[in-house]
Length: 121
Image (tube, rainbow, N blue to C red; front, side, top):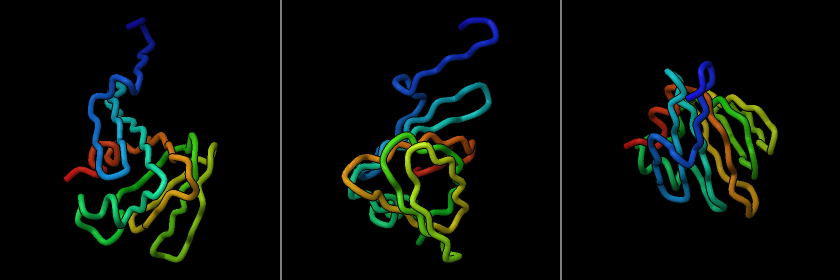
């Protein structure tokens, strides 16, 4: 490692989780965990993640940026958004989501706790 620079690649992730239609690759950058979340066409949170975590909606806090694909997110407070490439997002606990279209949705997530616990049984 070069002095003052720490370079990490998701191809050498510290941990990989693979619930249905989901790949979550996690790397530690110092004390911060960063995750690349890839969800495939047909991915619906209630069908692919709820059986793993056992809740009615997603209780994770998400903070990230969309690299490719689209994701429709619906919060229990009635708000709704379609996330697209280049969008920076924050999704608070209490939401559902699903992939829109026929392209995988790839997101980079920066919430330390979520990277550590998302889709973990």
